[in-house]
Image (cartoon, rainbow, N blue to C red; front, side):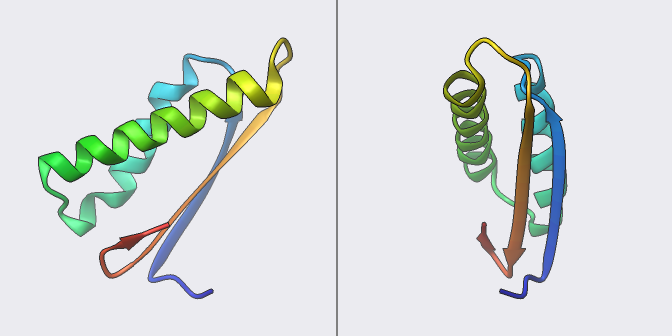
Length: 77
């Protein structure tokens, strides 16, 4: 699929990187001019996804989490 814009980042599966992931995605999506409510929902979704990846994907070990984000107009992937 072709996106208007996309990005990808990899980071260690450490709980403290959940905050980095939220900031990374919200910074990337700033050009879409989301409302405060939309930004809050995005932060929550990213937090839950990254936390689940770390807890359920890596349990007691450290690995790499891949975070992909893209958009077309106002649709976020």
